[in-house]
Image (cartoon, rainbow, N blue to C red; front, side, top):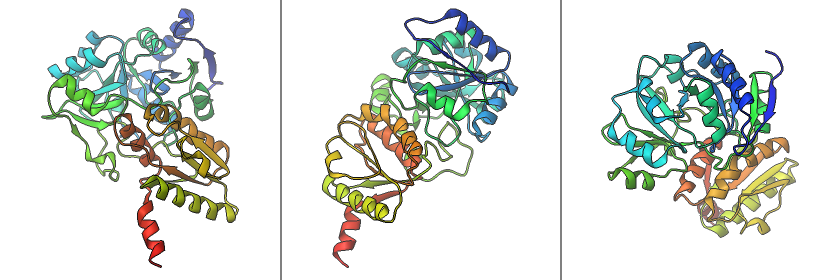
Length: 361
């Protein structure tokens, strides 16, 4: 492939000629990275088998990991989904355009390459005006996973996309920083009760308020990876991971800070580059080769915006071991902890258990 082109634009001032060119690239089977409110997406024509194969190849993504189909109008959903339940329209009215993906039964118009071989399709309408204009210009159906090398932290800046995919795709549209910073909430509407398959900015409580019924939560949020094919992106494979080994430390604030300080000191004494992820309130207690402060402890939205950029920064500093505080698990904090657990390969230490073992030896 020729050199990847790079172009900048804003939601307030969309270059129509540039968007039309980007849409043409997708219609002709090419790949375009573009901004959304969640993270940057890697877009291809969702209805072309070859385009979906190109997406998997560019990312190095397993082909059973389904892609999300992005649309720009509610009325377009009928071409790609069937047996659309009333709950889908209720959620669309409440949260679209926005960071919510719905799992529905697919039509024959959607190739198996786009859905990872499943009979269901993941559908979203993003809130970003650049994304919506591109989807329209591309024909209305854009398959777009995060625009990163598979397994690495998702991109929240166009520069992150360039680092991972330059030379593998046709065009990168730089629309500035993603304002949410974590991927969309995914809710499955094909079962008896709605079920969240991936947490995000739209919380369980928000969904239940709109639907007026209980919403289940998939047990794999904090469990190990399933053996079966994943029903939604991010369910099976190691995701969001920095190159260094990440460990989450949970417990009371004092026990957590004491444990992280001790672990980091041991690594640094051994000459190993070490990093720490912490809150603004505890920054003063730490010393390491690199420290990422995620904002105030109760501001989980700030942590969401900063998480992926922070993980990528550790890579740029060649940090071999990273220790992270755990974050509150309510609201968006559920999504932050989900991504941290994935990035850590579910490596988590209970600080109070470590403290008790030390005191008893």
